[in-house]
Length: 222
Ligand code: PCA
Image 1: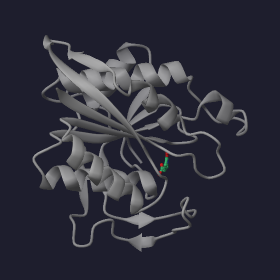
Image 2 (image 1 turned 90 degrees about the horizontal axis):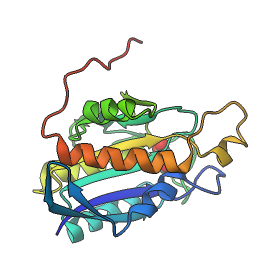
Image 3 (image 1 turned 90 degrees about the vertical axis):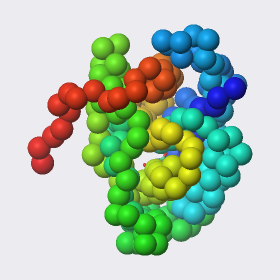
């Protein structure tokens, strides 16, 4: 059966949970049908990545080699963001504000030495956002995944996808805090776990359904 790989991260920065893994873990072993061709089945594999530079990429590369997934969506927490943020671009830079869970704090280092400056997501990012909005979920295209472990894994994923036959489609989605995390960050936005799960399933179904992305304005001014 064809496979879809979803990844989430360990908690980091004094949090006791990470919404990305809490949402992604619920998909493990689930089988989805292609919306326009229900005879085609896809098995979802969920994996948890450490919030660590380098080791997370090694672990992801091993998962990609072992499962040869058609589609990969890596998911991470973006504390302070209100929307499901579908990332457009991964950049070849690590610049850590805080040390990762292993104490690494790279500053202005390339993710991949001599790699291209950036890679674009190969997910239908605007179709994902469009469909989420249609279903009542706050969603947006994000123009930056930051310069921490999420951008690092996103760039590593896209580098692998651009140098191997699979995955055909790959990208990154940032999600807000869970309400129980936001309770400790007064004023911070959050999203309930069931809405995060609904949104990720919608994103995966959009990837299965849409061959091309939508041409719809979702850009921003500075
Ligand atoms: N968010 C961090 C790393 C792990 C996570 O869930 C980030 O945005 O880089």
